[in-house]
Length: 175
Image (cartoon, rainbow, N blue to C red):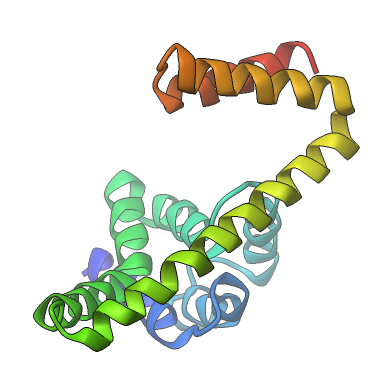
Protein backbone atom coordinates (compact mmCIF):
# COMPACT_ATOMS: atom_id res chain seq x y z
CA UNK A 1 0.00 0.00 0.00
CA UNK A 2 2.92 2.35 0.71
CA UNK A 3 4.21 2.13 -2.86
CA UNK A 4 0.73 2.74 -4.24
CA UNK A 5 0.51 5.88 -2.08
CA UNK A 6 3.92 7.01 -3.33
CA UNK A 7 2.76 6.43 -6.91
CA UNK A 8 -0.44 8.41 -6.37
CA UNK A 9 1.40 11.22 -4.56
CA UNK A 10 3.57 11.89 -7.60
CA UNK A 11 1.30 10.77 -10.45
CA UNK A 12 -1.42 13.31 -9.62
CA UNK A 13 0.96 16.31 -9.66
CA UNK A 14 2.44 14.92 -12.87
CA UNK A 15 -0.99 15.04 -14.51
CA UNK A 16 -2.19 18.33 -13.04
CA UNK A 17 1.11 20.23 -12.88
CA UNK A 18 1.00 21.83 -16.30
CA UNK A 19 4.10 23.98 -16.70
CA UNK A 20 6.80 21.71 -15.32
CA UNK A 21 8.46 21.50 -11.92
CA UNK A 22 7.60 24.96 -10.55
CA UNK A 23 3.91 24.39 -11.28
CA UNK A 24 4.05 20.97 -9.61
CA UNK A 25 5.68 22.09 -6.36
CA UNK A 26 2.45 23.12 -4.57
CA UNK A 27 0.75 19.93 -5.75
CA UNK A 28 3.62 17.75 -4.54
CA UNK A 29 3.66 19.62 -1.23
CA UNK A 30 -0.06 19.04 -0.80
CA UNK A 31 0.36 15.30 -1.36
CA UNK A 32 3.55 14.81 0.67
CA UNK A 33 2.90 17.19 3.58
CA UNK A 34 -0.88 17.56 3.96
CA UNK A 35 -2.33 14.37 2.53
CA UNK A 36 0.17 11.68 3.52
CA UNK A 37 2.15 13.51 6.22
CA UNK A 38 5.50 12.08 5.16
CA UNK A 39 7.30 15.38 5.78
CA UNK A 40 6.85 18.64 7.61
CA UNK A 41 6.72 21.93 5.76
CA UNK A 42 10.29 22.64 6.93
CA UNK A 43 11.59 19.31 5.61
CA UNK A 44 9.78 19.84 2.31
CA UNK A 45 11.30 23.30 1.92
CA UNK A 46 14.77 21.81 2.52
CA UNK A 47 14.13 19.16 -0.15
CA UNK A 48 12.96 21.92 -2.49
CA UNK A 49 16.11 23.96 -1.83
CA UNK A 50 18.32 20.92 -2.41
CA UNK A 51 16.48 20.08 -5.62
CA UNK A 52 16.87 23.63 -6.90
CA UNK A 53 20.61 23.48 -6.28
CA UNK A 54 21.09 20.39 -8.47
CA UNK A 55 20.84 20.26 -12.27
CA UNK A 56 17.93 18.52 -13.94
CA UNK A 57 14.15 18.46 -13.72
CA UNK A 58 12.91 19.73 -10.37
CA UNK A 59 9.92 17.43 -9.89
CA UNK A 60 11.91 14.33 -10.77
CA UNK A 61 14.68 15.13 -8.28
CA UNK A 62 12.15 15.80 -5.55
CA UNK A 63 10.30 12.59 -6.36
CA UNK A 64 13.48 10.54 -6.19
CA UNK A 65 14.52 11.97 -2.86
CA UNK A 66 11.11 11.87 -1.21
CA UNK A 67 10.39 8.41 -2.59
CA UNK A 68 13.72 7.19 -1.18
CA UNK A 69 13.04 8.76 2.23
CA UNK A 70 9.58 7.19 2.42
CA UNK A 71 10.11 3.81 0.76
CA UNK A 72 13.83 3.25 0.17
CA UNK A 73 15.16 2.42 -3.29
CA UNK A 74 11.88 0.86 -4.49
CA UNK A 75 10.07 3.99 -3.27
CA UNK A 76 12.45 6.20 -5.25
CA UNK A 77 11.90 4.12 -8.38
CA UNK A 78 8.12 4.24 -7.97
CA UNK A 79 8.13 8.00 -7.30
CA UNK A 80 10.32 8.84 -10.30
CA UNK A 81 8.28 6.58 -12.55
CA UNK A 82 5.04 8.17 -11.31
CA UNK A 83 6.46 11.62 -12.04
CA UNK A 84 7.41 10.81 -15.64
CA UNK A 85 4.51 8.43 -16.34
CA UNK A 86 1.98 11.09 -17.44
CA UNK A 87 4.41 12.50 -20.01
CA UNK A 88 5.44 9.01 -21.06
CA UNK A 89 1.84 7.90 -21.60
CA UNK A 90 1.03 11.07 -23.55
CA UNK A 91 4.13 10.69 -25.73
CA UNK A 92 3.28 7.06 -26.51
CA UNK A 93 -0.25 8.06 -27.50
CA UNK A 94 0.93 10.99 -29.60
CA UNK A 95 3.64 8.95 -31.27
CA UNK A 96 1.05 6.28 -32.08
CA UNK A 97 -1.14 8.93 -33.63
CA UNK A 98 1.79 10.42 -35.53
CA UNK A 99 2.84 6.97 -36.76
CA UNK A 100 -0.71 6.27 -37.91
CA UNK A 101 -0.71 9.41 -40.06
CA UNK A 102 2.98 9.43 -41.01
CA UNK A 103 2.20 9.34 -44.75
CA UNK A 104 -0.19 12.27 -44.54
CA UNK A 105 1.03 15.33 -46.47
CA UNK A 106 0.10 17.54 -43.50
CA UNK A 107 2.22 15.51 -41.09
CA UNK A 108 5.15 15.49 -43.51
CA UNK A 109 4.85 19.25 -43.90
CA UNK A 110 4.67 19.65 -40.11
CA UNK A 111 7.85 17.66 -39.57
CA UNK A 112 9.51 19.63 -42.37
CA UNK A 113 8.67 22.88 -40.55
CA UNK A 114 9.71 21.61 -37.13
CA UNK A 115 13.29 20.74 -38.13
CA UNK A 116 14.48 24.34 -38.67
CA UNK A 117 12.82 25.43 -35.44
CA UNK A 118 14.67 22.71 -33.52
CA UNK A 119 17.93 23.70 -35.23
CA UNK A 120 17.42 27.35 -34.22
CA UNK A 121 16.56 26.39 -30.63
CA UNK A 122 19.68 24.22 -30.40
CA UNK A 123 21.77 27.03 -31.86
CA UNK A 124 20.38 29.52 -29.35
CA UNK A 125 21.10 27.10 -26.52
CA UNK A 126 24.67 26.57 -27.74
CA UNK A 127 25.16 30.33 -27.97
CA UNK A 128 23.91 30.83 -24.38
CA UNK A 129 26.26 28.07 -23.21
CA UNK A 130 29.13 29.81 -25.01
CA UNK A 131 28.32 33.20 -23.47
CA UNK A 132 27.98 31.69 -19.98
CA UNK A 133 31.25 29.83 -20.43
CA UNK A 134 33.00 32.97 -21.68
CA UNK A 135 31.70 34.99 -18.74
CA UNK A 136 32.58 32.28 -16.24
CA UNK A 137 36.00 30.97 -17.31
CA UNK A 138 37.27 33.37 -19.97
CA UNK A 139 37.94 33.16 -23.68
CA UNK A 140 41.05 30.97 -23.55
CA UNK A 141 39.54 28.18 -21.46
CA UNK A 142 36.34 28.34 -23.52
CA UNK A 143 38.27 28.21 -26.80
CA UNK A 144 40.38 25.31 -25.52
CA UNK A 145 37.31 23.30 -24.54
CA UNK A 146 35.59 24.00 -27.86
CA UNK A 147 38.62 23.02 -29.94
CA UNK A 148 39.39 19.96 -27.80
CA UNK A 149 35.76 18.86 -27.94
CA UNK A 150 35.62 19.29 -31.70
CA UNK A 151 38.86 17.38 -32.27
CA UNK A 152 37.88 14.55 -29.94
CA UNK A 153 34.37 14.20 -31.37
CA UNK A 154 34.96 14.79 -35.08
CA UNK A 155 38.56 13.83 -35.73
CA UNK A 156 39.36 11.14 -33.18
CA UNK A 157 35.72 9.89 -33.00
CA UNK A 158 35.62 9.58 -29.20
CA UNK A 159 32.18 8.78 -27.79
CA UNK A 160 30.42 11.96 -26.53
CA UNK A 161 29.97 10.50 -23.04
CA UNK A 162 33.75 10.27 -22.65
CA UNK A 163 34.21 13.82 -23.91
CA UNK A 164 31.64 15.09 -21.41
CA UNK A 165 33.27 13.10 -18.60
CA UNK A 166 36.66 14.49 -19.62
CA UNK A 167 35.44 18.07 -19.55
CA UNK A 168 33.92 17.48 -16.12
CA UNK A 169 37.23 16.15 -14.84
CA UNK A 170 39.07 19.06 -16.49
CA UNK A 171 36.66 21.56 -14.94
CA UNK A 172 36.94 19.91 -11.53
CA UNK A 173 40.72 19.91 -11.41
CA UNK A 174 41.80 22.84 -13.58
CA UNK A 175 38.99 25.34 -13.17
